[in-house]
Image 1 (cartoon, helix red, strand yellow):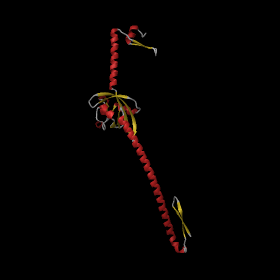
Image 2 (spheres, one colour; image 1 turned 180 degrees about the vertical axis):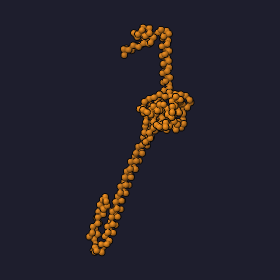
Image 3 (cartoon, helix red, strand yellow; image 1 turned 45 degrees about the vertical axis):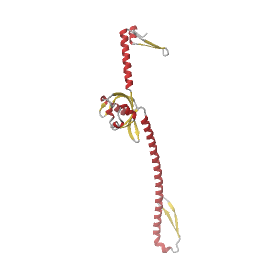
Image 4 (cartoon, one colour; image 1 turned 60 degrees about the vertical axis):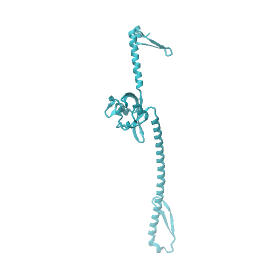
Length: 239
């Protein structure tokens, strides 16, 4: 009885017993039998490797599918928040300044159709004094810091009106792509109110100077007394 081991470089697969009545008769064929068994061992090992590879492929495909599903869900959530945001939002390439997307609020603020905004350099929507080089002044400042700092700028609407805006920007990663995300708020009315208040205060001060009338106020909760410049001129100091 002859025993042959079924094995490969990585694993032993078992033994095969061969019972011979006359060994001498088969002596010349024994190397062929051994080679055949080695080939069978390699076939068995290849089948096992293919099985492991198939299992690994299925596992990898499932992981990829789960990741794609997760990314898709996050993108859909981002898109919903992006589209429904009250503030104007625009995305732009950090190097070229080309706008890749914007929401309805941004288009409404500029009174320009979204299709006419996407694909354009953000610089063209800013006032002339902002258009220095290939990027607007505020875009360069935001890109250098990317800290979300609010900066004021002036932009031009589709009707040619110049509006005051407050812009906050940050660098984001969207599906492996680096983009500048800008948040825009129209502060034109606020700026006009500030100017009007400053004008009224200046007018009041001039009126008090002409009429030699001073006014004062006292806050008992803070124990603070305040007076106008004319009151100080009349008494020399705030009483």
